[in-house]
Length: 344
Ligand code: NAD
Ligand code: WQD
Image 1 (cartoon, helix red, strand yellow):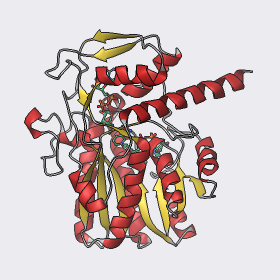
Image 2 (spheres, protein in one colour):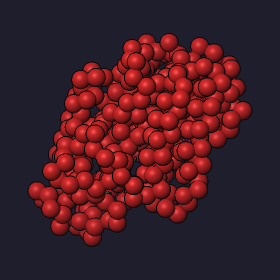
Image 3 (cartoon, helix red, strand yellow):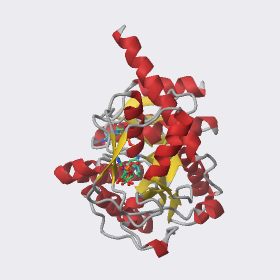
């Protein structure tokens, strides 16, 4: 079976292409490399040892999308990662976010309709739950979706609604996976997260600080009502997350349901300070950090109930926080090696 992966050179997309290939799927991956690089396709091939089709294409370009489906008429399912994801940037430039994330999804659905492709897995986010009360945790899929506190978050909410409507009016079946906080890298350290500029997310900031690219990590607040005062998140290993997509593809082939959402997390929450301690343990390095003020828009705590994914997709996170941090660190060391070789 052939699967089209949009955003296949990105952080989660690249790991998913590897897992799809290892599960025996043929892959066509497209990316415009706006937030990734062409070399990622070579690294994927190096890991899997299997060729796949990698194409430079922008999902905002309807003609190009149709060309891809025409060239590979045996595509039976699509996994849609391609999107912008920087929360702060989305506040500055909401139109670009709606154009790429929502407009791009509309284009993709049109191209799927034109070519009778009926299965779609969509990258959604736990950001759709907003700030949830402690008693609602671990959060289940039946918790209400609220107005997101950023245009980025809203694009995910709007896309879920768009996908629901399309599934009701056509033969298309859709799974939306609501990711919690994806971290880590492939064990080979050949693929991982490539943050653009100063990272907004915690783990790349931690690894860049440990290696000396950043001077100091600031912990955004230690006065929250949590066990140590710092925020709580559900950090999920990107390889576990990638495997959930393979399960979702199998699920779509066997289900009669038209639209389903699944949380994809570990079911455990860890505080920011716990993450730092765990990172110091696995890397053997002391992390230079300070406590700073709260970051605007942060939710206090969120972690997933993943019972639905376990029961219906047959998927469960298997890796530990320590393993995720260890692989993130190995990836940062690999990036440093690559840089050193380039300057020599
Ligand atoms: P990423 O930026 O690493 O990957 C996205 C890929 O899509 C990049 O390679 C980028 O170049 C590509 N892309 C962007 N716009 C495109 C376009 N118009 N045409 C073709 N390619 C395009 O991000 P990621 O972390 O891998 O995220 C993948 C998906 O998961 C996104 O939809 C994101 O919103 C969602 N998500 C991510 C997180 C997270 O914390 N990383 C959490 C929840 C949801
Ligand atoms: C995690 C925790 C920070 C950086 C974001 C998006 C969300 C989703 C995942 C896509 C928070 C703290 C961080 C730092 C810190 N993405 N932190 N110092 O905010 O949970 O979620 O990425 O859908 O939509 O909002 O992730 O990694 O930015 O932060 O103390 O330098 O680490 O305050 O508590 P977040 P994050």
